[in-house]
Image 1 (cartoon, one colour):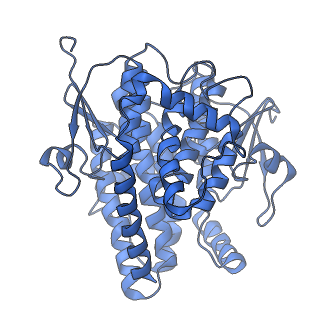
Image 2: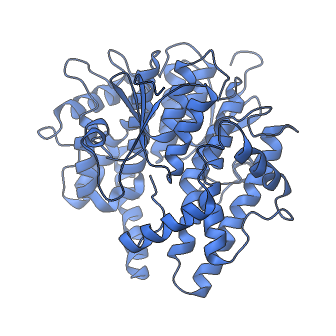
Amino acid sequence: MANKEVRVLGAWPSPFVMRARIALNIKKLDYEFLQEQLGSKSELLLKSNPVHKKIPVLIHGDKPICESLVIVQYVDEVWSSGPSILPSDPYDRAIARFWAAYIDDKWFPSLSGIPRAQGEEAKMAAIQQVRDGLELLEDAFVKCSKGKPFFGGDSIGYLDIAFGCFLGWLRVTEKSNGVKLLDETKTPNLAKWAVRFCSDVAVKDVMPDTDKLAEFAKVLFAKFRAPPPSN
Amino acid sequence: MATGEEVKVLGYWSSPYALRVKWALKLKAVEFDYMEEDLTNKSALLLQLNPVHKKIPVLLHNGKPVAESLVIMEYVDETWKQNPLLPQHPHQRAIARFWAKFVDEKEGEEQEKAAKEAREHLKTLESGLEEGKPFFGGESIGFVDIAAAWIGVWGEITGEIVGIKLVDEEAMPLLTACFQAVLQTPLLKECLPPRAELLEHSKRFRQKLMAAAAAST
């Protein structure tokens, strides 16, 4: 039974929305998932996020919370008795936040850059940028995980969520461009982590099927002549 | 310096991001060594401490580096608990983080070239303030105030250069008053770069931006 106390305004293809849903799943919280339609914004969305008019929005009771990573931290802080999402040590938290910012500010834009690239040369350069970023993230994984299965250690944490939400779009990009980005020979730890992440109980029901996402990408391109949403 | 506690900040005199870190530490009365970087000739230390971005500010706490000004601010707030920067209540914290992110996305230094847009975003930022409460942090200076008040200085300078009033008392009275209150606080005022030099630096920075924009069209 969906709990009306917690609502998520979002859409199934959005990696940013996925972050909010994974966080709620980790805390085993029921919530109502209100999906926005492509190309239009509901009254509730415009009212709840007047500044950006973007998904995801978490509505807790009557309070809206916007920005995916802000939502994840909010969920972690409110439902503090559930499994922790952020690390407990301030320095580990700073490292997790640093890499999450890197992913949002640099890595995901580089991924979005591939379908946007005009011409073969630009495309190759864009692909290389993504691969370079993945190598950095491979190092980050080794340092953060300290031999454990996830960035967050034994279970999925903040950085797993921040990065893992893009795996669907990563696979779609690989498929539609005929290129391997997440390469088990170059970034073996990330490749294995990706499998673990996608099969995690908090993730598997909210991670979209790659083919379904690829179909959606075609619709999105056709409708807006633009690659994935970048909120 | 308290024994066993080594705090260093790598910064640049004209960087509002470095200013945020100085302000956060000062408000918590944390002593630190400030190291000015020459951004035209970055030190081996900077490249070692922030290999991903090679940028300031970097906080070095007992040998451990933290980069990205808002990440540093959260770290400072969590490590030194006196004078909390973020509110206690999770919803208030979420609002603070939201506005801090808004400032970074919409009012970064690069935004100087889109002054009119920046001005519109400042009007939006005004909506984060409450009548009767002097700061984003309420009665006292908090996270968003530290993240945003630099705009009161840098915005004024950009305004002078491009001829648009960015921080407009009429259009955004609460924001203007908030920034002024933060900037006039002696502890924070003493960290500000000298205005004349900042003006010259900003003019040169804008010229470079214009040249780069012209070259890429």
